[in-house]
Length: 402
Image (tube, rainbow, N blue to C red; front, side, top):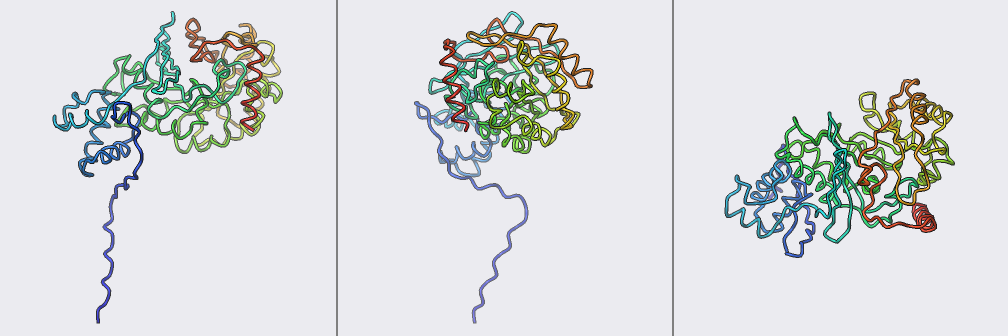
């Protein structure tokens, strides 16, 4: 009598994930762009090009190092890859950078780049050098789905989300400009990244997460998550997920402490109110006194800058027991804006009230105003809109948010 043979037990140990076929959209020249691809994506791209799996795994590791650690865009420079393989790669693949349309330098040293996507969409990034750090302000969308009334970017329609290549490409382009390859932890000019450029990062969550994982990878760009800050206007349902899956510092565009004022200047407040937002801040994974949540507060004359509003901000932070600091931002004017900047004495008084309550409240020094690179001034096309057009756009965006 024949007995069925017992099934062999799997051998314990590491098992590589099985590549899931995905479509790699070629450029006009027929080559696939490798920028923005993870190790597994690189391996899949190589296998899709008919490279044997074991060979693809090895080459993906080498490519990841050359692309993200050494900043190479030319396969001929990848000297630990055989010459014939380099030629094979160059025929099928490319490592790109965002197209630079215009680069400007402010009188204070701030740099702004106008960039263009392959499909002809414009977006911006800004580098702000300081004595002890250099901060790159990165965009996550072309335009913005929100309509914060003090923000120039908010007057644009949302065109589309930026993909990981277009997000991480901003960091790599800045590294190119600063001559900071290969990646090394000491002596960098570019030390910090803030997701505070064009767009709402949490409305482009997957692409932002995947790009930041490349930025934080120790074998790649190797920037610590403690050096990265993601800013949101308050997309409450995505905040916990951001803390769990990305784990970077959180900044919240608060800008007001009462419902009527925040409803006006940050219309998303009508969907996710202040109390709900602050509870999400209290629940944010990893927030503590060493990693405080930053509340951004743009100072608008006779709108949100009274002593009473400063005291209310202190009360709210204490109520929710938030490990917090407050960045006070003098309003940066732009064509057609409805608001004025609070007087310096008023800003100083507002800051003093918060400081005396034991909460840090520095006043941010405006940077890059002369090239429209300051906070709230980024906008890829400088066309002016009438007040009626801005109001109509605001109503359309609010209707879309529900």
